Length: 218
Length: 222
Image (cartoon, rainbow over all chains, first blue to last red; front, side, top):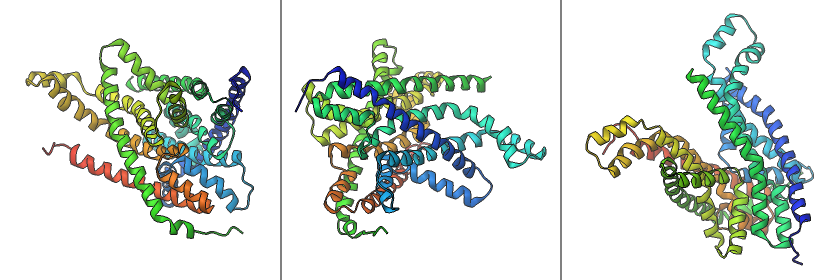
């Protein structure tokens, strides 16, 4: 039955934003941990570690996120786990974010002048202390803008979880559209909600970047 | 234990390879048309005309801050309500061009702004016409400067094009979905699809590297 588009439908779509946020948060936090490991391995001394990390990044940046989602989704059955859209989406997006953040942060780590590492070595700081107190704090400043930029990409990426059946913002829109058949209105609303989530972050990223450029120019 | 069964994939490899060709064709068309949109967008944005700049700004921001999946739903399901009905394949191409055009506009704008004013003045001093200046003094050096970002955006476009399978446009991901509906060898099919996409990405980067060597290295060979 096709029914009218009501405020209840609008509310249903708006409430689904929380699942988009939950999924984004899980993927971002998981990706931050994974990305740090990847970035450190990628800029490490050992050649094997560097190669493995580089391969991981290349595979995840060289294949569609949609395929990664499908692979993890059907891969759960392969390793004997029950198929669960939220679990599959969380795992796939975490791996995806780990690769992208790993690459962004590797760039930031390598952009810290080598003299800093040499000074830390001369002070006989251990690898841990060198990274924690000397390299990473400086790398973090450089990495902030592209990291926020990637967060926008990640939030948009969570929309693909709807294809494996996880009810977040996009899928909520599809459900309401199937019941009301007002695609212009429904997908317009969905797009507007994504825009409200992403645009402030995009502006923030641009602002940080502009400030960084000033700092470098000075 | 899960029993792997790659037989359906190998039996239908020709279907998947044909799907890969469709993805290459779709991506190439979207890249060429997207480049045209990007150049027009960038020129509009760097022009002094206020309303035009404002319009391009809205286009770029709206597209870059909403998911491609929602854009394609809007174009395929939403536009018919406004009287514009597109077939899945045309809707897919339009959605991809609109999407990559927004990113490309920003990239090419950055390229144009990287050209020092003195260079344009030097072109004028040499007696070049406005079209010649735009082509040889602004556009070609600008493209050379932003070539890496532009081509990685194009490869990202090719990967994103897998999403057009949700409206059953013809491409590699659709070919895989069809095969999956017939054989249910899901994991095996998507593993092979992922490998094929990876090979396509490698192929496109090799192609872009070749184009760069041919057209964008100093000294200009022609």
